[in-house]
Structure formats: C-alpha cells, structure tokens
Length: 274
Image (tube, rainbow, N blue to C red):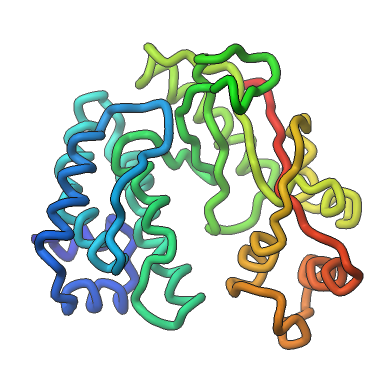
C-alpha cells in the first residue's frame, strides 16, 4: 500500500492521490504490467515495449506497486535518494499534465513512465536523460552503431534558463560515469519541436528556448509534428479550434500563426558533446 509520504515523493497532487486511492483497479491487468516492469528493470538500451492497460489508471496502480522494485534497483547502483525520487516523481507530474489536458484523473502518457520504471531515465535538475544505444536505423553523428548515448528530455517544470541547463548538463556528465560506468556516454541527443528551425529563427534570439535549441547541432531529417507544437504549447490536441487558443505570448501567436499560414511544425534532431 502506498503511503502518504510516498505519494508526496512521487509528486502527486492531492486530487490525484485521492483519485488513485478511490480507484478500484483490475487486479489481473495491474499484475500483468507489474510483472513486465519487474522483468525489465535494468535491461537498458531501448524503450520498453509492454502490453499497456487500456485504462491508464491501472497503469498508475502498477507503477505504485513496483515502486519498491525500481527503488531497490536505484539503491543497488548507489543512486542517491533525491535523484531516485526526483526521477520517479515524473509520475505525479504527468498526472498533473493529464488532468490539465482532460480535466480528470488520467495518464495519457502512461507508456512514457515505463522508461523511468525500468531504470532507463533520470531527472537531473531541469532536464531528464535516457540511456540508449545507437542503432543502424537511427544513426547519430560522431557515434557508432551500438554506442551508448543519452537522450535529452524536457519536463514541464519551469523555464529553460541557461544557468539551469548548464547545471543539469554538468550533473549528467558526472552522474552516468559514476552510476553507469559500463555504459560510457560522450554524446547527448534531442528530438523535439523545439529544434524546428522555424521556431529558432522566429523567436527572439535571446529567449531561453532559442538559447537552448542552439546548443544542439542539427542532423537527420525532421518529422512533421503539428500536434506536438499544439499540445506542448496549449495542452490540447488538434487544430480545429485555433481561434479559441490563447494568444498571450509570442510563442502562442507563433504556433497558431504558422498553422493558419499553411505551415507545418516539425520535430527535428540535434546532438551535443558532453
């Protein structure tokens, strides 16, 4: 049973904690996901491909049931408690995002949380980093197939100030050699609509977002990602109600204006040396 303190450490808002405690899970479905998680902990290199519950509230229960398992893995590697809990607290953060998006207790990104729960993904200050291996199908500059790198991910936890980003990258440079020495990393990469050249060219060049994006050297072929721009800017999906979206910031106006002008937002690839 999850304690009140564990809910707090996992980042749950009161409304989501109350909803989780009131929910009656499907025991068989929860056990199926929990068993998959336990079997995959420590098997790093790629994103898990699990059978995910149709109702993501069952996924939440499976994550709660396997907290002791992933915490034991972290402890076995010597990972400090504050980093362990900060990483697992993305569960509460994703619940908050889902509630803002849908207005109720839900977890739209329950598949994403599996990366934290098998030991792939860690929150280090402002950013998150996932260990994975480069594949022949998705090469990364200055690396070879099979080489380990870290993927950068950007939680919705505040501004991307240069100081916070610098601090996070320095934490990553120290964290992975110390706690995962068998997986040497020298490159970090990012796939995000924040690297769309149109965004980087049309926001003020001294903005935090542009300064962050310019850290990465672009490579590969961008992918159309219209919904990513809509979702991460407005926490809604689709382009049917553009006139109803707030236009209070330059970013909001840029996102909507490009779509109205017939443009398509894209997610692009970039890399940096650690």
